[in-house]
Image (cartoon, rainbow, N blue to C red; front, side, top):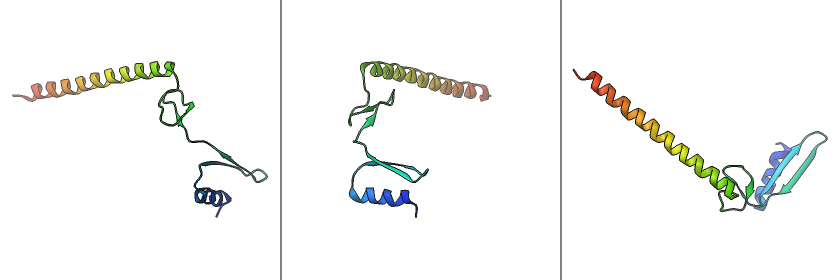
Length: 93
């Protein structure tokens, strides 16, 4: 069993959130505590739990991206439905 797995089991047994980084050059092991957090959906910065975006700028970028995605989906559905209609009309004797 590797040293990393032993440390991981030890940390899980204590019920705390830890990030374990193992650097096996000279067997240096660093264990540091990371508080609970989420990441911004746009810029990936660490933000408090329960929030989705970190700033007004990210909120604006997210709304623009959502609008673009919605238009792309509408366009794709229009192409699919149009293609089905064309195929039905072509196959009709």
